[in-house]
Length: 210
Image (tube, rainbow, N blue to C red; front, side, top):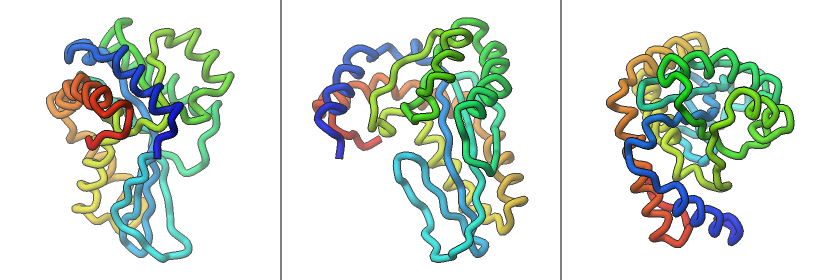
């Protein structure tokens, strides 16, 4: 349930950032997801709470994934097992985001990420001011607006088809699936942003089905 405060913030955000499609081509979307492997089956979800397979196994194995994309293509994945903190997040931005963003867009790009506490810490805010000053504020409780959630869902479906049985297989298959993603595929999600904003406006800031 979206709180009243966040509903109004979503509505205001959608009205302010209802840019034309091509304006979103210079936007880099980033986020993290976790993937569990249990009894040879995959169990995974993102911050939106979407689940694919539920297992009762007590000792599931898990990998965490940082990912990003723009209309030009995907960014190198960062796959890790430890819990992410603010310093690790900054290191990922430095090692996986900045160089690829400059290759794709030179200095003409902006960053979109959600309000996870790791993304909004003092350390990260300082890093962004110094290195990525052009980033959009993001309304809380808004995974439905962020197209990276749709990309994650597609990745999950592909992994379920491949049915990895070990963590090593899962990592390899994840890399293969990620490399299959084309700029044309990603551009369709960038194109969806004006429509998402319009849907949020029409719903009065409530959740949309996207």
